[in-house]
Image (tube, rainbow, N blue to C red; front, side, top):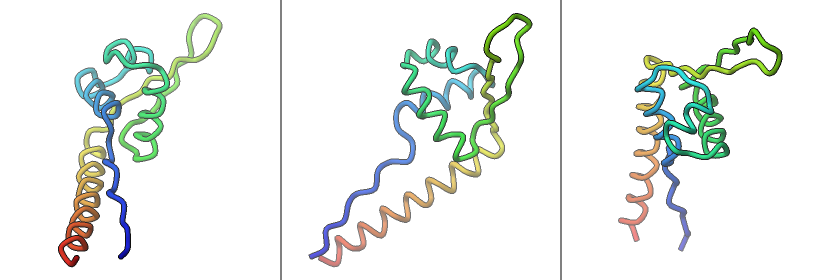
Length: 106
């Protein structure tokens, strides 16, 4: 008998918080997302990295008038995001359906 693993969900709790923040505010920095959603910096960073890889969010760099690091503004690409999220959810559903079909055969 072959052991198969149940696939993990595509978006975890932190990803959903970051997406909901960007939907409400349209843009923001990672620090604003941390404070607005009561998350920690590593949670926001990993969620943003995943969303960048899926091309759901965009990052713009704005130079400050003072010295220091440039500020990174994260924006949410609504049109592209909806299509990508629907595609990834459909892929996840197909994987789970295949797993259910395998279990029915047992």
